[in-house]
Length: 556
Image (spheres, rainbow, N blue to C red):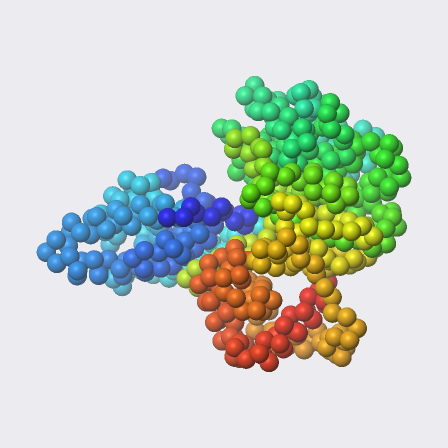
């Protein structure tokens, strides 16, 4: 059985929240009561739903498959059912499901006692869904809670970003940023040298074990290794970020944050602070006016300026966006690729860095200036309707790169050993959000096609798109794709599927989902659009419409 996928970036819903809703009438019968988090809901009456589970679901069933076990077992039905339910619970736990919901009626009057016992043995929370509560009501309750939690997260992130930007403008900016960060992550923050020496800290002092682990992480990221890493201790999540403006060796600095392990937004907030501290503590005066201009541009952006307003501070009029994903067979660090690209404007992503300590993984970081993460740009989707449809970021809006970079347009970008690159066309600062999407699309094509580098190409002046006014093309695209307007996952799937020439396997690879899910989505798209997707004329028109929407998208 393949290992379950990591949980999505959408906020989890505590099972206790669902149990507390009197309108649902849910009742827990077995399994652990504390710390159970639901990320989504999946309904299945299959005897083996495991291939369709992504991990983190509440699996809902009415027990239709149990009748077949009883019928096939004959006189040994009771013993056969006990063994079947034990295996069913064990497989569900191994697949990473968070809980099992068993519906009362129309098949069963009560939850089978053998299932209650099996769930207790395997530590699987078992919830009774009363006859008057449809499964769709449970799904809706989960997505309502996800939406509310996501709104709270975004509000918190916005407030933290404003506070950090204001702190960076104070007389002692490094100390002020550390204090603001400690308040907003509710933890300990520090600037550490590779030898563990503190160069400023804020927040409640950690215990000796956490402090020692923080020193080890600072040594890892400060020795020219990964640009970020994390470690987890009982009750504490540690994140370390190399401050890229610093020289290596004894002058290297790392931002280390100790926070609650169940507080994912803390990592994003820390990533914003790491960018600010890189500029604040970096030797900008030694690097001349270019670095000073970059620092000034970032401060202006964080204080509310528009990208076009800070363009003169960046120096180059045109920039190329690069998305990079590390291959599994390489130990090349993100810093080595940044050096090869020849730019200090890099943002480490969520991809894993090699050489981290045990339990370390890449930490969350903010998007490029003027852009948004895909999980922030789109609202959480509604309840899942397909057997294996994954909500939220798991729909594959874009792969999360190990590194993103802004490179002056005049610098040549070539393939780099151990990395897969997606490269945009040169663009002015005001159009960087579109270039960022183009680089993400190029990276997806490179990963799906197992190619080391793919460049995004904009149609030339003699392309078919030049024959139609952009406004008319955009209006036509909106009308044609209106049935998909409320389904970002379907639009993304159609875009990938068409760009990869209808390949199920390559589309599944690009989106990070199962090929059967791709087939289900394409079938649903064909039904919603009431068209034949096997017709090349239809495919051409849909591709033209999708490209028109992409060109007409507003900056993030």
